[in-house]
Image 1 (cartoon, helix red, strand yellow):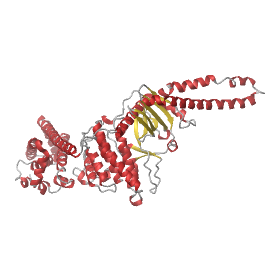
Image 2: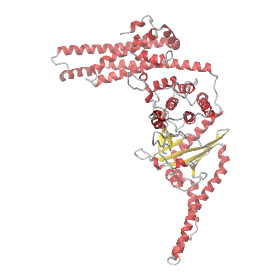
Image 3: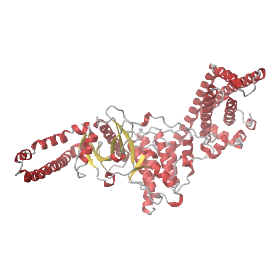
Image 4: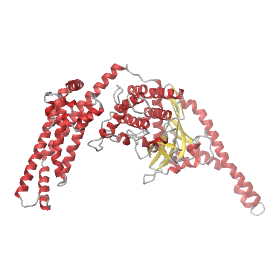
Length: 612
């Protein structure tokens, strides 16, 4: 194999083994390209071997990027020089890599050597196959390339690839690749944790973090109550505003939180009518706040009921007077129904509202009927849920712009539209920073709730009232909403933890936030920001997004500044020194300290200097 001789002086080193194995993968794959059109078994084996090659090269790249720059690592593995790249033979790099691997160095060397053995086995099989095919071609009268010749070759290929030893060799290779990835990943995590512990003292959950936890718990209870409230429809769609209207939180997890959202049901085809959205506010109280607000809520509730009853009765009285004028002379018998006291209808209305049965069984239709009335924002429409732990009451939305429903636009679409404008104008620096901070707070508040998917993107964040009719229109990035499906009583929580996490991201949720913040910073989609260094031989794979985000976070070439990019880099790598589980209170505190607080400071500085 070419290039290996250049590093022969570093016998038993890690670097020469890595480049040798990387080239060996290419050598093994090359013969199978010849047979891909003859038999699907050959093409299948080639694809599976190619996947293992990509996994190995990506893990090598992750290791190398700890000791050299991103571009250098890409050039070493994918550049035209291949194993002849001068960095492969640098003694200092070998020392740095050995130091990085520490106690795992010998195990890594053994694993890569075993990978090479399996590759030699595959290479031997392919050489035997080529010899057999060449010999067969000489012994037969069939013209090479003719249909009879191709059929004979395909038959031999199917027979060769049906041998169990090839599948076993590929299985062994997959297992060794997993071992190599585990060893190197453990090393990198250990190094990151050690440096973080040395740099910062242990973190404890602060009062602000506890506040976010309480808001998150309240939002989960609202989601669960909505899921139980409608038995007519199996699934609903909610546009959940990430910013709470009001949050009064005291000790012992006592809280009163108001959530604003839009709501509609999904059809059997899975679509939602965005023009039929219901806008309302859910006032969620828990702990001591339930007792403190009980009398006040009851008073408001009965005031609202009284006004509602008044509206129900007054039109009937008016109708009676008009009918009386017409019927005194012609139809006196018609007076009897109109003159009946309103006690029965009043009692029926009171019973329907106060019992809440109608609301909790047919929430969609009930709330739609009630909100058609000219209600005040302080009038309680009904109680969605009332248990020992919490009470969730529904009120009309006070946001007139939302109540006059306009087209919903995703953040991803806004970024795409703005990126096409070029020099026409963009989103202000302050507005982008404010949105970044708002989304970071949303992650800390809703990370363990069904409102936030594990792997989310800018396409999941929506804004209302943003209609970009022309390139001169400036989008408003206020009041972001999460687009979420709510299952009915027979469904399950739509928690996206059931989705496959990102292959290389240590925390898919924080990685998603990092990607969205990068798109906000560059005002471009991550896909449009990809470079050749992020691709595998010019093609995208499951790791392209991770490598692109990692490179862009390190580059710091936007007007957001280096501090912002350091925040994004922490998110992409989940590099906080407290593990990778955001349910851990220490990681929550570190996230608040290293992400939310710096974003708040940057926003405050821009506000003070009147940057726009």
